[in-house]
Image (tube, rainbow, N blue to C red; front, side, top):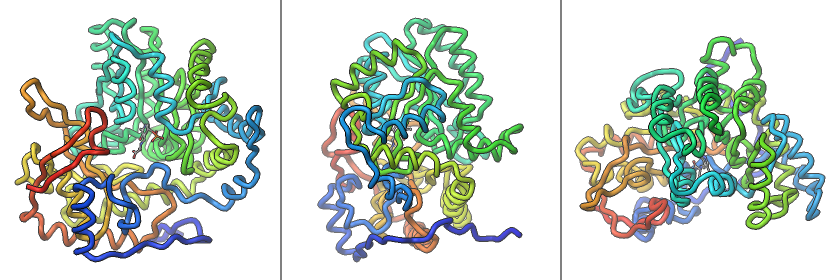
Length: 458
Ligand code: F0G
């Protein structure tokens, strides 16, 4: 029998209080933080949608695993456990533990990058891009054209444009391509999934030109849910098997376990090639830790081993994707311009459509972030020209292709009543949309400026 309500498939064993606050208090908090949500302290937040990364609630089995953590410097039992799970999932022989995803990125792209190199991806996540660019290499995004229309309902808007990929490989020359990176799901492109067909096409092209093919797999379980439900031929295949099939296509994968690993910290780099793995291992030992723990405690590795199993449970994944969809669809019905279809880990609001009177130079996304916080204590993040904007030689803003605001949903943390509250906050923000004003940046850094920038309301 089918029910209208998809319940959280877990009970609450331990609670963490939320500090409620008034609008006037939040006004002060926000101005003290220079209108940057990254500078607000978490006890000043009611619903924290800043990220789904590292914010998961762990299960009792994960906490039990934590007590089993083997903290040996070398050859930890917990590492063996994690290594076995990751080898099984990725099909890679060489697994390097890292303290989080970007550490794996720095190690790998530090080796593959450098001046004159170029990387292609559906969309490079901000840390991916930064870790490539900091080596002097170039990062080129090439998501399918349709992805730039936030309202177009297509099953796999995270796909990489394979025609463009081949053109660009020819243009730059295959030997200058550091790697092709498929980010699943495509976080910066709206959390949209990538199809198996697309991954196969990318592999095919990479093989033909002798280029390394990598998967940024931090949401590979969520991506598998979409393949199972949307792509022909996968309706009877388990989520785990789909993820394995996809990862097996690549020469390696990078994982921030803070997402689909269902843990608060951790990651890894999985590679098939021995020489590449050895080069990366040297860098791992110098900067992260010995190869049987990377930057992780034994207990972290226990939790990752268990989390990577739990994440593929059909009841969990079904609840996860349905509950994100519930928020997205409700906002859509209210007239909030949301990116469609709704992705796996987040709902993306099109801030340019929400505030059409605020020009991109005045950052409409930042305005929406500020108003959601002021109205209801909801913290979220702009994914638009604050995050990805550049300046031309005259100092004029080159805006990002879209001005989005991301409501990223932590895994297994909020209940349906929290989500109903968020919907009510949006109702209020929506009625006052005409009065909203933009922002000016008064302080910023060269890389990843959104983390530390200071803003001033206009
Ligand atoms: N790749 C993708 C697609 C990501 O979304 C992230 C992190 C990383 C790599 C880096 O992993 O944080 O463990 O170093 N995304 C977080 C987010 C921060 O909020 O989307 P990390």
